[in-house]
Image 1 (cartoon, rainbow, N blue to C red):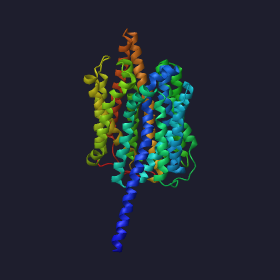
Image 2: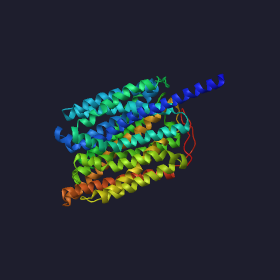
Image 3: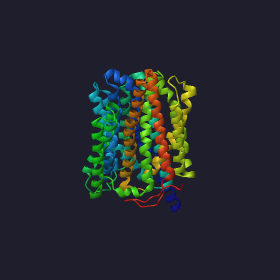
Image 4: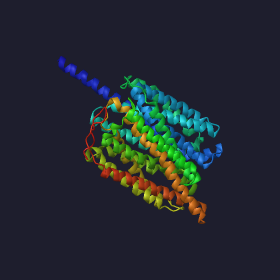
Length: 489
């Protein structure tokens, strides 16, 4: 009788802990939703925002880039801070800063204050995002449960990118551009209150000094590289400024590698990339981030500047994309369990490329039902499957002591790719538009031609990611601090 009672109590406690950790996952995913949402929600508001704050097109691009650049440049440091000082503690600091920066952005009365607030948002996101992903891996150490949790995580993050454009349109049309920032405040406050009630304080796993020189050099390399692509669009390939920035980016990159090889406690232990699943996941996420950020920025401007949709209509027009993403996100974890991560990732990237190529063929006077709906549905399917599968690869085979590092790496790859994508693909679109204008094309046709090249270039990047998945040799190796689990493809 005692044994039965004890077993019953143990079972009840186990069930309670299980429910508690899934609730904790939902709150962590909500925080990640905000981080991803903020990279896309502002896009719909850009035309209105630019008009009210008197910002040029180039300055408007920096409203997105300032966030992505700070986020991507500091993610590795944020992951290491989480490993060093405790994942929950760093997460709470990050979400607090994110809420404060969002309020500041909404209150901005000048472009300078807005850009500073966006950079502060990105910095705060760089603290909370890797810490949140690390907490997930610690909450779900079992392979099966972690796969499901990562499926939820990837789905929520992917939905955040698509939902941003819809929510941005509704908020901008109803309450003004400030609302796209103020919406973060109550949601972030909820996360800040609830997480300490669900997750106990975790002990810091790493006790070594932080690699500040590594953080400085990798951030400088990112800033210089993105700045070089932006300068090409404004000043041309043969201007000295892009060349100098490219040289600086290369020099800082080399310095970073040297520092990491010699540091006693490197920001990124280079031997972690011997886990080939992790390495492949980060490579594909780099390309995936480039496609995603540039796509949502371009779609918003394309629908308003070329198709002449207002902010609300532009947001609603992307609802099918978001719906497709939500549906596929519910299916992908089961597909991964049945087929393996790599086949699902490869299929998703090819579907994404097909949707982008189809969208590139749309004319300046495209009809939504016949020429926009189909491509965006394919794009939604590709984004949903690709994001979940790529995130899965990027965190496999890493244990608690370097969970923050893995979270920082996969998020850095996404944001680094996003910053490069909007700069590189934006440059391609700008050069194509200029070339068409010089040939006498009407402004709207020239702009449509530029976006066509952007979408087609994004398709090429998706195919490149699929090629990497197809040819990347899978080797079981043991990274620092963990073992490679991998998929069964």
